[in-house]
Length: 471
Image 1 (cartoon, rainbow, N blue to C red):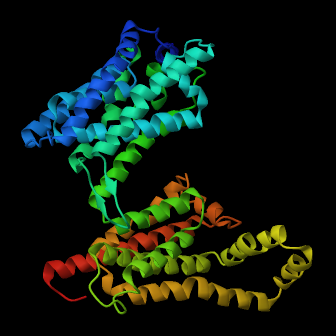
Image 2: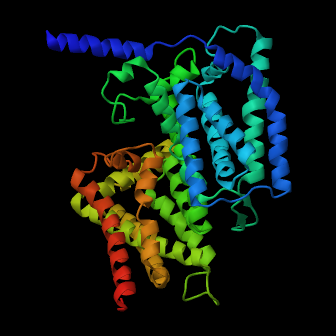
Image 3: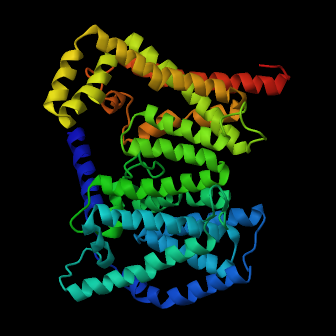
C-alpha cells in the first residue's frame, strides 16, 4: 500500500513537472520593452570600446561579480524566463558597471546564445515557436515580425559583442585574445546549470523531492524541463535540449583553450575533432597532425636551421607521443585479435573496390585476396602506411618530447571518440569497420597503452625536472 502511494505521489510530481505554465505578463513585458533598450545599450558598449572605458577589478570585486552572475542566472531560471533573458540581464549589468569580467562573460554568452539558439533552430525548425511562447500564430506577417524581433534582440547584439570584445585572428597563428579573460570563461561556464537549477526549484514537485541540490544528471532536475521556459510547440526531443547545454559547455571549453593553449595545439585538437565528426579513423587524424608538424617544424629539430616556437615543439612532442601509441595500439590489437587486419582490408579496400571499380577489376581483386601473395603485399603496404611513418615521427620529434607535450597528447583519443558521438570504447570497432567487433581486452589495450605511454613520459620528464636527472 505504501509503495503504491509512493508511486502515485511520484507520478503526480512528474505530471506537475510536465505541465506547461500559462503565458505570464512578465514575459510579455520583457518581449515588448527589450527592443527599446537594444540601441542605447549597444551604443554605450561601443563607446566604451572606443574610449577604453572598461576597467579591471581586484579579486574581492571579481568575487562579487561572479555572485551577481550566479544570482542573475538563478533568478531568471526561477522566474521561468529563457536563458537569453539571463544573457541580456548580464549584458545590462556589464553596460552599467563597465568591468572586464562582466563584459567578458557577456561576450562568451553571446557566442553561446548564437550556437545554442540558432543551432537549435537549424536542427529543429519548430523551435522558432519559442519566440511567441508556443501559441498558435498562423499569420505569415506575424511570424516575419517575430523573426525580425529575434534578429534585433538576439542575433545582431550577439554578433556585435563578439566583434567588439572577442578574439581577433590574423595571418597564420597571429591573434589577439580580446577582452575575454580566463576568469570570465570560468564564470560563464556553470551559468546554464545554475539557471536550470533555478527553473527546477520553481516547480512545486521539486520542493517535495528531497533533491533540491542534486543537479542533472544526478537528481530529478532534467534537461528536458527547459521546455517550461521556452514553451516550444510541438515539444522537442531530449537531444535538442542536450544540444543547447552541450553547445554552451563546448563554447566555454574551446574559448578557454584559445586562451590557454598555443595555436599549434589548438590546430591539432581541431584535426582530431574534425576526424571524429566525419567518422574517420584516429590514424587518419594522426597523419594530418604529422604533416602539420613537418610543415610547422620544418622537418624536426635535426633539420631546421634555428629555434622553433614553443607551440611548435609542443606540437612535435604531441605527434611523437601519438605516433608511438598509434603503432603500439595498432599492432598490439592485431596480436589480441588476429582477424582484425583482414577485417580492415575488407572494409577499407575490398568492399569499396566492389562498389566503385568495374567488375572486370573488382572480381580479380577479390579472387587475389584469397591468395597468400595478397597478404604479403598488404603487409608491405601496412608498413608504409603505419609502421614506417610512426617510427619516422618518433625519430624526428623525440627531441621535442616533454611532460607538457605528453599531457597535451593524453586526451586526444578520447577527444576523437567523443567527436564521433560515441560514449563507449566498443564503438571503435564499428568506426574502423572491424567485424566481428574487437574483444573488450583489445579495446582497453588500444586506449590504455596511449594513456600509459603519455603518463610514463609525464612521469619521466617530471622526475627529471624535480631531481635534475637526465632521461
